[in-house]
Image (cartoon, rainbow, N blue to C red; front, side, top):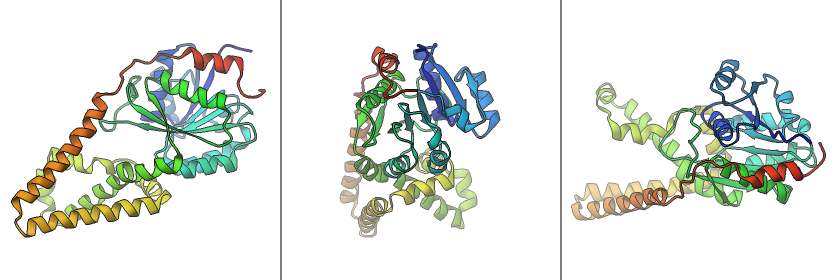
Length: 311
């Protein structure tokens, strides 16, 4: 058996290329194949040294891989699993990076062949959108939601891979993950959309374009990206999203009442509670263990000694 680990990264945007760069930084001998629908994007990833080769054909890029990472928008995952599902070899590991896990796990269960191990992944990044960077995941959480059919060995491989890129594995149930992410990831998209739609519809929009500063930038950053993909994420978990939206609207109504009634002290206290919550969130990042990427011997040995099935 070759000692070369064959990894395929499907989707070579910021997340996919950063994963590939981190794996290469951790172990330059890892063989990485990249695939992207945009050939210019794939060529750029190869030029940056993130992948050893770029394969324009999805099937050939995935069929011999030990590990395949789907770093693609949520809206593309189902079709990708349908197309490539029959061609993954038994014993391999397939992961994704979407922020909605329940539907992805269901699609994997419906489309992957027997013996293919699926572990859903969801990197939790702070600091906004970034260009590809080998250290993008250092110190961050990386949620893992194994399918019920994933072997214990493959779950270990997924954990080792996450640690190898400098992140910290965080195992969580898919339903629980999606319920929380509805509030902290998906509703912010809708809040940003609402603020922009109201602002653009205002008679003062022309002035607003000029005067909007860092607060407007921060408040609307969540809407940047693929609008159709954002809609898919929101509609993937409508019950949780609506529940969070209802709570958000109730809070806005309460704050509105304080303003209408000129309740200065109460409004100040409400804002102080929010500030305290923001600081608590920020401190949780400061307390993270920032260990640099180290390709764990356990991950390599698991893949070398027992890949969960025959190739």
